[in-house]
Length: 317
Image 1 (cartoon, helix red, strand yellow):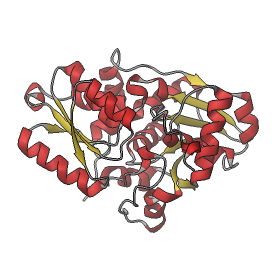
Image 2 (spheres, rainbow, N blue to C red; image 1 turned 30 degrees about the horizontal axis):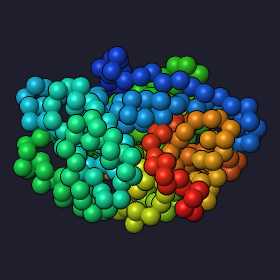
Image 3 (cartoon, rainbow, N blue to C red; image 1 turned 90 degrees about the horizontal axis):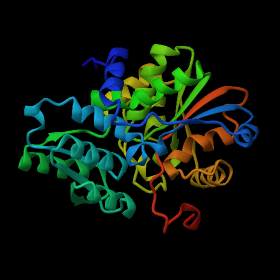
Image 4 (cartoon, helix red, strand yellow; image 1 turned 90 degrees about the vertical axis):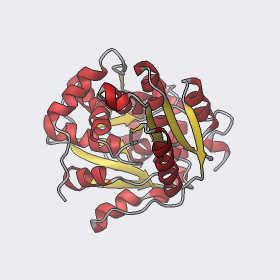
């Protein structure tokens, strides 16, 4: 079955829909980071987005695209944290209920934020199967509209607006490094690059302990998720059918990095750039610091800055 991908017009419509609701986030540069990577990096700081993550773009677009009838019973989703917060806030702004399924190992700070935005939280076991089966029960009980974290064309289009803004500000790039979990950000970024900067190589970045995208691209078949053991909690999910299809068409390669590389990159960014990023956001920086993009103009999306300050990863690895 052929997938219908969001178009540039869909991304532009998303940008108009979320304007005034989502922030147009800043782009940072760093001499010390450029020197360490031997590259010119342009850093799109979605850690300064509402809810502290790019996820608000997709959730906001999807929820405000609903008709009154579709939104009447509220919205429901599953998420380890950032998408959960995004759906909770966007639903609050729309004035509809939000039902959020969260795994029991989700960071406490993210769970508290979801509750703070007024959403109902439903616990589940920390597996993708448990998330999906629990969400199906919630939707059956509430008749809420499901807003999938990544396998939704409106979510993908919303996530792609970050890349549109970056290209508009800095021009064409040689390489675009994007963290990969469910693939919504990678998919939206790849579609944006294909439309406005076709010479850009879009490259996914994921933990070796959660390498379903790398394996899927290598063998040409979508892979199940790995056990959720990586410290990059936002990247523990596997690609959905839509994001996998977009990856096969538009993504050039997937880099994988170790847990130690993630921690080292996260510390480097905290110390040198003086910005708070979560472990998932550190994965593209780990790729760059390893020298994989030397001598290139490189875009990186900082996917988020939400983490439990009582459990910093360098205290655990």
